[in-house]
Image (cartoon, rainbow, N blue to C red; front, side, top):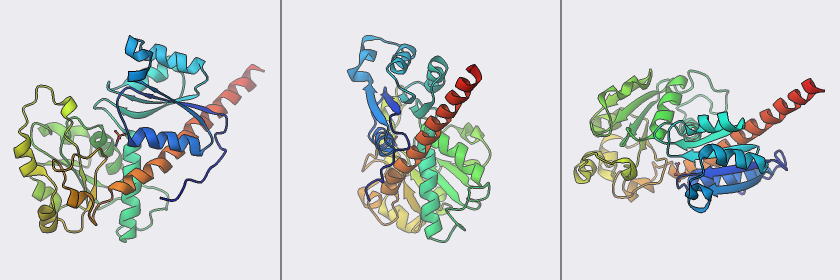
Length: 301
Ligand code: CP
């Protein structure tokens, strides 16, 4: 990957990364994005801070604000936590994944990956044209696996159909309720992986979230037999499909190494697009905060 071009756009601005759950891709790319724009960053993680002693999300947020944080990037196990933090601090909060609810920056980097890859195959008119509601018209995207617990699936299902794509959720009943298509227009449910693949331009494989499976009876051997993306399935049902995975992958469970590292895979592209997307979001969040603060000062003077 080429080194990031440094900019001073956010010089002297302070960004806090507040992570209550583990992360490799999101945390690192947010931090690199902030640093490449010249911002100062500080990481607070649940296991090495006063959160471990019982400090609330609200008190943690207010403390970070008092220390000069102007924007907080939050990953939290509870759905809706970013809204609570925004209300209690008044700061721009960037959602780095909240419970089983949403992972919006992942959906944006997935979109960027799809646009770049499909446009390279001439499936789309122009990836760098302004986005419009038809830019993904006719593109079918299968999202396979643990839909029930996946904030990535939810964010993508809310975003991609707005640009014309059809989203096909695929998985067993335990991980994909019948009513999942009700999430919005342009989303359907397909139980058989082979059928979903045969109709897809893109397939996004999801990790089985063992940490959220409590109480669910899932036969992993049976799941692997029915839903694993392996070279035989790919060759037979979707030899040209673009393979994506938000990570972390469990190789040998939802996807094999041959597929993850093979020519159809855009998985490392996804990781790389993450930094650019997060640079854009940080610039937007901090620059609009600066503009609002100046307007308030003008009003007061
Ligand atoms: N895709 C994603 O959110 O990965 P991390 O958990 O490593 O951030």
